[in-house]
Length: 258
Image (cartoon, rainbow, N blue to C red):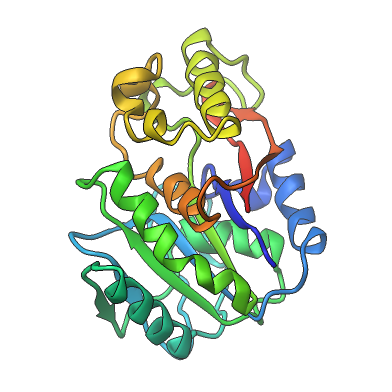
């Protein structure tokens, strides 16, 4: 059975950046059994209720500005997965969750940047699910738990966000700038809580983790982690797949659950 994954997608330029996280993502697809479909939860689609895109072919959304022109020429027009959207909707509704469907939206860069690296063929049917940043970690764990049966159906569930994500605190002097203590302290606490499956602590990370509001001034980039954790099942087996940092405090860690 496929694990559920959390990956940090970093800056939109990641496909061009010579950093360890890019190399990790480029090797990720080959390290896993080939999925029949992918469900990706992106920090860059934030809605009031969980939403699923139902398109037959995904467009490539360049939801950023001010980057090199070559970045806007990248495309990842993977097939859509409307049948998987219907299955995911059923699972969410059965677990008491509201669901909206979007028949127009494609893949934003939180989805296509890591997928372009891990599955460059863009030939696997792909479904995107939104986050609800105004809702709690417990809500997102429940989302993941509802979707956990998809893993038995050869669907790869990926949460794509950022392990530490504070754009105002980035060190713009270089990709390989040293990590500050506040970032490493937060990341170490979350890592330990994940490895020990301290679910109650994770749900209350905002109060318990050191430097939590500094690591995540807004929570949309952290919520995909909780979906992936939930999709791993109750008390999931947790493995850290990757650990690195770019621009000082942009932590690029990745985990497998289940």
